[in-house]
Amino acid sequence: MKFVDEVKIRLKAGNGGHGCVSFRREKYVPKGGPDGGDGGKGGDVVLEATDRKHTLLDFRYRHLFQAGSGKHGSGQNRHGKSGEDLVLEVPLGTVVKDVDSGESLADLTELGERWVAARGGLGGRGNARFVSSTRQVPRFAQEGGEGEERELILELKLIADVGLVGLPNAGKSTLIMAISAARPKVADYPFTTLVPNLGVVQYGEAPPFVVADIPGLIEGAHLGAGLGTRFLRHIERTRILVHLVDVSQLSEEDPLKPYREVENQLNSYSQEILKKAKIIVLNKVDMVPEAEKLQRITEVYAGLGYPLFLISALRKDGVKDLVRLLTHMLFEAGESASGKGIEVAWRQGRRGE
Image (tube, rainbow, N blue to C red; front, side, top):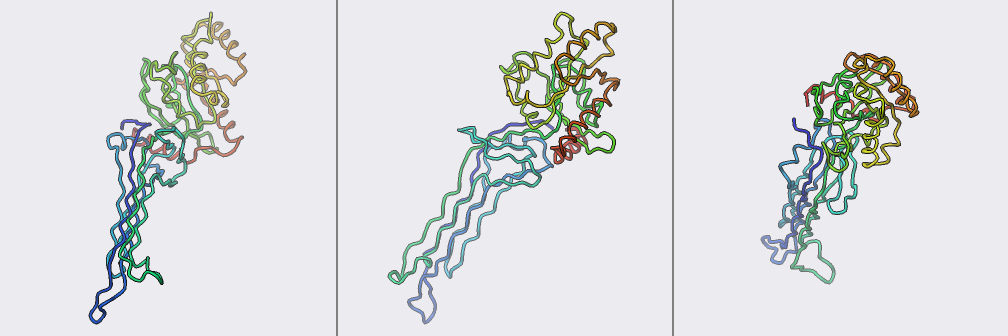
């Protein structure tokens, strides 16, 4: 299934039905009073978070969504039927923004959470409502109200505890395969991963947590180079960043260069991301035959002051210790942030999405 994480949609709530002008007409009652009923309320447009969807694809090719309008009132004080609400299911983690201002209006992170995006118009009152001591025969009724119409932007931000970042071909997809049941496409060329992938990870008897594999970043990504930074929104909710570095491609002259490139792109996107807890992982150690070179590079990265792991994701060497630390960091701080994301990730893996 194609992954779509941003769409613009137009919503139209239902109009309220008009009130009715009517007078009671019965045999032997030549001058019955007003009996016009009220119009029905227009239907609302409601967004509801669900774990049955993992992409905004359903909104890509259809841009107008309209709820039902209320029926008009009629005689004998019969009120019009209210219009049906239109409930649009969106993936967990969907953020709703105003098109013009960019203001965030709603963030749907709980299963079943609802937000009324456009309210239906109120039904107009029938003439029976306007009877008073000075107005016995009202010959008018109220028109139904217009339903709200608005344009919105929907942005999907995946719900995960850990985000994997790094340059293309650093081994992020291989790592998520090594520690979870996720099966993203893996190949020995850059930009194999074109969309984020989720995997559920569990160590021992500890609660499971969700890891997000983000497509690789390159220098100038914040200006649109490569795949740009559009997928970085999917690590905004994470609590820990795992920065993968392909150690087999590092030069001894400037081993920190690829690390700095990614950090600069993260900083250009959002300084808040860099405030998250971080682990540095030097991957593909099995492809560095010179032990002394590996030792020197390790010392340079250890000097950054973050937890450091040397692994081979392909062979799963060192992976268990990494998962153990992630589990400790997540659950020492409290319950996993993404219990609702685990079911999403599991379904995604089962369906191969």
